[in-house]
Amino acid sequence: MTRLEDTDLEGLAERAGRDLEDAPALEILRWAADTFGSRFCVTSSMEDAVVAHLASRAFPGVDVVFLDTGYHFPETIGTRDAVAAVMDVNVITLTPRQTVAEQDAEYGPRLHDRDPDLCCALRKVRPLEEGLREYDAWATGLRRDESPTRAATPVVGWDARRRKVK
Image (cartoon, rainbow, N blue to C red; front, side, top):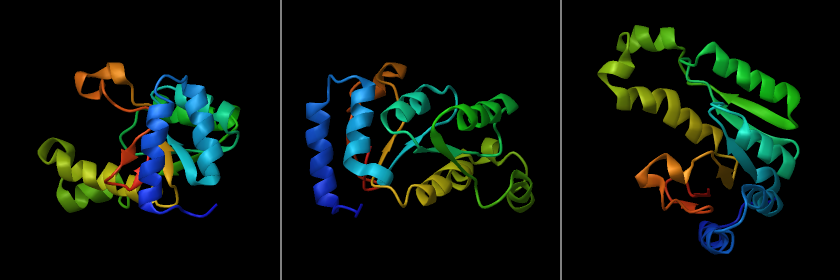
């Protein structure tokens, strides 16, 4: 599938956001799979496996992108491994360019305490930007009920910073 132009993607996202506003999650994921095919992925923190499970039902073999910051609990890595083993998904693990030890050697230990913005840029933002390059659309487990700032999050929207449907 070829990549659509940004203006086409943005318009598509706006229309889908309106049309699918009250749709169940599985229907939204099926729309994304039908619309984008292999240029669609799901990101998951592996806090739970709900989104990966739903995505596997909508689009068997879907790419599920996991960002391994190097700071996860063993249980989180275990959840990722279990998802890969039992669900019909393709788990893709993204890692930062530096290990935690390499980052500590360059920037000093506990960078996350001293400069959380730099730490997040190195360990989360850059790897995710690189990992999402080949996709036109991505889904997350963002929930409207998690905070007041997320209450108006569209079910399908335009991620202007990344220039993708989300």
